[in-house]
Length: 384
Ligand SMILES: [Zn+2]
Image (cartoon, rainbow, N blue to C red):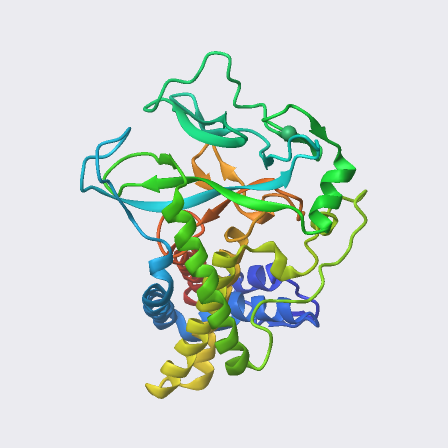
């Protein structure tokens, strides 16, 4: 069976299932890589491949943790609050951010946190939201709802501060029209603010929430500083720009497929915040390191390439979950991914997941996903 333009390999895979001799090719290098991962390596290397992808996947995670784990510190409860006992440790699953613009009312100028809505958990048995209040000229947040301070009766968390790029100031009540909002982003006058932290306890059900504090922002700033160092190091090591600086394709806004450039995101790298950039380039670095290690330890080069191909795909998978277009899925309390829609569209408020631990969109979760796929495609070689 010959499929010269096999794409993702569905036809050759089915042909393998029927026991045919299969030849597949494509002129798109992404398709070729997928074909190798789906059709070639699992048949060629079988169970050993599964073991090594798991083993080296763990190695990559441990190495990455040594370097960037400190930028996702656990929360140690100091005194009893709405949840947790003193001394208990909680793992950060994600950080919720709101992009911001300055209010355009000349007598106000407050920072407007742009949020589509304020729900953190919107389930039949659990309702938690972020409640905003004005303190002086500043907008502040607190967590309200089940397990927290009661939700004020007149508060509707579904009503956000931005709709169709029209923003409303919570301090003075004036609005910023869509054209001005876009202009502020293009001119670099927009910012972002970490508003909440999502936590998880290994022995407890569900997620816990608290408002972001000075310490969270300080850790983020440290990650930002370390990113500058890491970029410098990798630029020398790789001989290319470590953070993708290629321009985003400017699809006209009416098509709506990629509209983020309207908000001043001009390169692929602009889709990530500093800590996300740091995490992604660190994982890439460790995957490349894994290849060198494997060869040093006597693995065949071709085989080592096969193993790290899957680890490279795991980096792709976390990139899908570690960008500023990811939505906090309040109905499931999980981190969403960019390709929930077949589009790259502005996300006013987003969740920054924790790739080194936690739940969806983590390194370990991505490797596990890939291992299941290898095991599945490998079955066919046994059938043959
Ligand atoms: Zn205002």
